[in-house]
Length: 115
Length: 111
Image 1: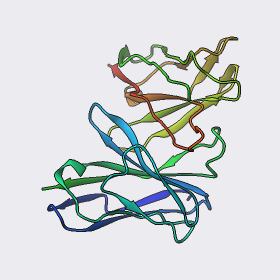
Image 2: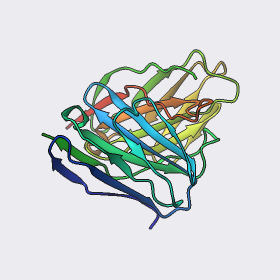
Image 3: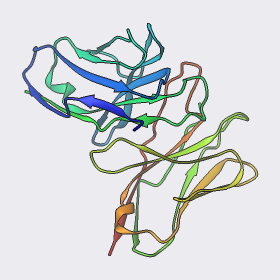
Image 4: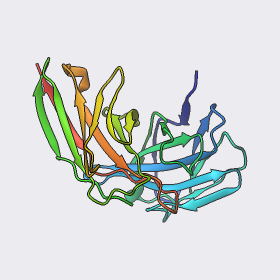
């Protein structure tokens, strides 16, 4: 089944404890991205990747890192999480990022709470 | 990048047709119009996409007038399970390849 998977789905952690949220897609998509969703603020893009080893900042990249060593994986890294990073996170992928007609496939989401 | 404006919320009843309009006055010649649906605590899901006139699939219809400055997502005979947030995106990939979602329209379908 074509899908985007994220792990973990739920995570409660404490301030400053490094964490990684994994994202994997099995559709051979070139474009992948991370979003966070907060009440009243909608979906905001954190980072995106056009292809392997190519990443760039979205609208809210502060406090996050990403890597794209393999085409299928795009982990989101929080080196020193803070309470303002408590949010619902979504990973998404599409065939490529150069065409606005590309359908974005979203993962199921990761609900992160930073205490 | 074309800015979109949608109603914040809409209410409907089961069995009714729902029309959600999106304004995009600055749409560019090459821009497409795409709608996504998001259920609570789930990722958005592609519903429909169009460039002009009318597009229909098994879920919805998309009406785009000749000037393309607006578009209307039409959901026929809604059910409770259509309660969701609906996002309109236009020319979603700008020169930086960022995908920008607006605030969306929260549709509540009542029994």
